[in-house]
Length: 374
Image (cartoon, rainbow, N blue to C red):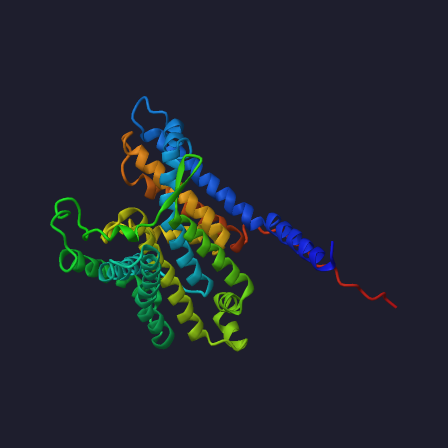
């Protein structure tokens, strides 16, 4: 083994050891497990008589090919929404407007599909994806500039723009893009061309959409960016302390604008992927509080891109279980309850070391050496 390969091998082993030995990681995992156990206890008291909770969970998720397919489909937008929030968090910002950016990204992609319906499928798909990235970033531009140059909180501006995006969506699907055929079914636009549909492939009897692979590719790209680029290092420093970022010579304003634009672009991409893979039309239902669940995904992941994937898959699993349990008499709010339990448990786990409850006892300082009496 060459010296370079040996150094890389040792670096990987050191990284794995540091992760495994991180008490914060295990504390967070324990909090998630406790939250899930509390949720199972609650669910067992709400089911109709004769319903097997674990059998229902298994058959609706990992026990069948259709369950796995639904799980992956639900996980795709949640992973991207979690990435969008995590990118902003890395720079010390909160993007609460993922839902609005998702809808505007899907709107931009839909506009390309309707304007250029005769393009070859691959070219049309690429243009729609690029348009969704640009649309989501454009929707985040005003909050980014307001935060950087006017000192306006991005929490307020991104949140308020969600409602504007919903109104914008309603205008287009009841006006320029309305369709009589679908008017009595749901509030949605006419369907996009079939050449814009994203395909899927079958592995072991499970249909996996290309949209899921795109989400994983975005996740991997972000991991590389934040681990091996100047942008990632700058975001980490500024996110930890804006004052430290200024002291290091970074332009904190430009860094914040760049982080929010990238966050908005990822959210916009999520909207186009949902539309092109499952919905096939532009509608408010493209997001079912995806952005707000994405905040929970990012918090559970503690900003880690690998954690975003795990948390996104976990919350998608909860959503799939909630859909199946509605048949067994459980209300729609059960998923929100389970998500809330997870968030509370993880928040408590994060607060314990910070507040000194789980800190190790410090040894008393040594007694001062007294000079021998003369």
